[in-house]
Image (tube, rainbow, N blue to C red; front, top):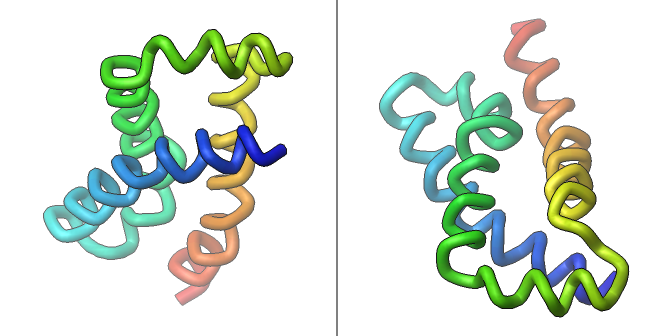
Length: 90
């Protein structure tokens, strides 16, 4: 679990930066949606470019790329769901 937290933090640094840029350009109501889509894609892409060799470490621990991406998506979806509902209601 400690390894996943390290991966999650590393991916979400770029995710938050990209999502905040989208929110500034398009409005803050796009932030929760961007955390799960565009920002996540940018985070995974930059991790794949800069830390590609670290995937061997995660694979040895039993995590595949797809599983890591799905777990990050699930965590981000759970975190952004309340904010998305607030924006939809109000």
